[in-house]
Amino acid sequence: MQAVVDELIDNGYPGTTVERVAARAGIAKTTIYRRWGGLDGLLADLMAEHAAQEIPVPDEGNLDADLRALARGVVTSLRDPAIREAFASMVAAAVQNPSAREVLSRFLAARTAKMTVIIDRAALRGELPPRTDAAAVIRTVTALIYYRLFIAGEQASQDIADSAAATAAAAAHRPAIRDGATVANHGASARPGNRAATRPNSSSPPPNRPSGTRR
Image 1 (tube, rainbow, N blue to C red):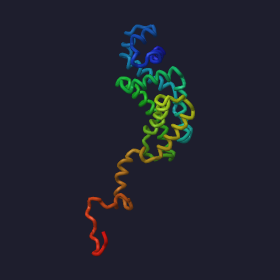
Image 2: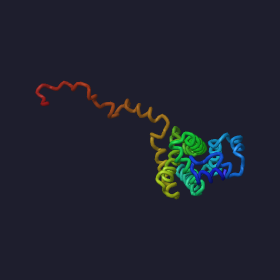
Image 3: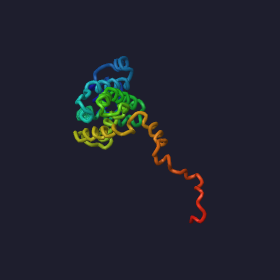
Image 4: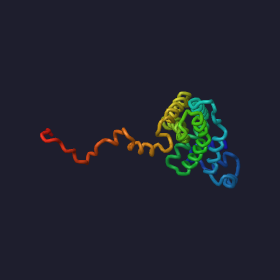
């Protein structure tokens, strides 16, 4: 797998080929095709291996601490120059290349699925409503980190991790990040006391005014 990482660092996703990886690894390209089916299968295995090896699921006893530990784990894993460069090349390629996007999406989906237990435990402790969208909270943490590192070009730091965790924790308490929130919001207009429900329709004719009233 190191040969794949080295190729991504040197040539990026567009320049990485099965032939180059095989030559760098000192193996026949038929070996790669037979085991992985091609470059995308090889990259998918690389990303899955990376996801499995790093960032254990935090269990600190409360939501804020768990999200902070998760965010710090993500940032720490990306402090490795080789991993960061390889990941950056995949992120850049995913914008325009469907195959790269599919590989990256599978990696992120696997990590998100692994970490949603953090939100489930928080709901059981009563820290969050039971219908909180666990995947959305976890995606908020990682999306903020990836944006600041790979789009804004900031250096990996604990401040970035803690900021992402705090933002995700705050978002988790908002109705918009709960399952079925849209339906609930539509139903709100029918509840008594809702100002939108009692506001006159602008297309309705005005009420009859007593005679002599100035217009």
